[in-house]
Length: 461
Image (cartoon, rainbow, N blue to C red; front, side, top):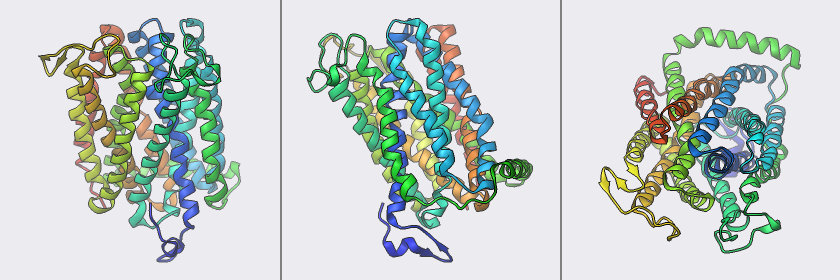
């Protein structure tokens, strides 16, 4: 992101911090993204489903129930905490507290041994704690955006943050696949090396190390934000903030029906975000069950998807400032809807009902035609997912009152999470009842169709 030093100091009557502060804020996305890349999508969740749970279908169901439980906690608490933060004025203390939960929960995932059902409850609890931590920390980090750049550069700031996060995820995936996680049969990583630190391929220590790696990565790269990015000044003590925040939240909820576009946007965000979160959460698990992919295949797929996501987020940020965030969100949701429908028509030995040769066991990476089709669709999802999420927080900044921005980001997180347990719960339930991963994933079509219908009611400022 390019912002001249003269631009950063004064825009109209409001002052903005220097470039170092903005770059340090952007690095929060870099610090947090490996949790989503390594834990929830491409390495640990497929490992859990295929090696910790008794089979991929039950693993997908259990992971869905745990994701739903964490989403429910986030949904209930995020607007309350956002209101309290607006009243108190500070953001960084909240980021520190919830960042600590991310670090603790991620680190505990090291103990998720394969084939040991006794670790499953504790492992899912650790996953829930870490998920609550990273999501709440993100709420308060997002709320700092309006104080960093002028309004006409919010789109680029948001898009650059998402793109930078994707790059961090790519680098972490390369570290894991190239140097830490090895094929249990060959004992070699993707680059042909023996795993570093003597990690044992048979007990999948290379997969399990993603938890501690995520924790260390976050602690290192979130530090510049704490040191260089200015926080809002303190307003009220904690007890008074609690009282004032709850009062303001009550007033905000009462006036929300009069803010028709904002209410329509929050509802749309509730629905399509649920579909997107579920798609990312179960994409790797679905590939593991459908194609028999292991960590190296899923991780390589993740690298390609993250590269596509980086490009998409960067382009989306530029389109956001020129076309407006609503158009970017609508276009991204249409791409995601089309990709989900196409994925449901891809199987090991067929593409869109046309029979193809299945993957050859022990063959070259992604040698099957269906695998390559899944790669292409995954890259489309990656390119669309980043702009959708980046433009959504930009649109909120444009629609919400500036003096209650954290409260509205709390509501934004609420709408992103209040039904976020519904998608994983439906996927988990339908998968458990039908014993079919494809049937479970089909529910995502409904979320994107409904989200687009609600978005059409939003009048963008």
